Image (tube, rainbow, N blue to C red; front, side, top):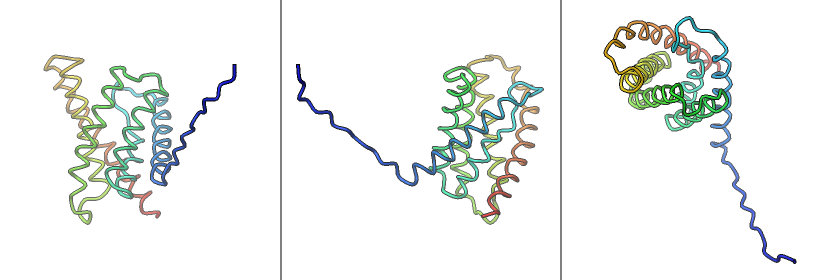
Length: 174
């Protein structure tokens, strides 16, 4: 029996923006996977190295690209590391969304006074706050979680400054 039905092939050519976003997202995913191999003495506290890529994208290309890169990194690393749709993934997603909302607001601040380090600090504290809020509402429905705030805030301060300085140094090399 001969079939005369033809199959129509649809080709989508990615734009240069799509290719750039995919490259930055791949780099961010690689940093997330690398970071997953670094032991942490305190569960839930990580340096957030992939956020350096998000900061660079925010500074070079704007919030939209940074948001795409951040969300692709969260989903991609969740899949690669085997935690997609797990509570850890939900925490990462909540932290990422919180930091992106904070960066959307911070992106309107004058750049001559607010640079990558201040943006990194805003994002780090928003990430921490979003994760603790989700943990309180869903995973640990007890007010005792408030005792973790100083520890997580200290980590947000340290890693926010470090990641911001690294991003600023990389941006200065342009």
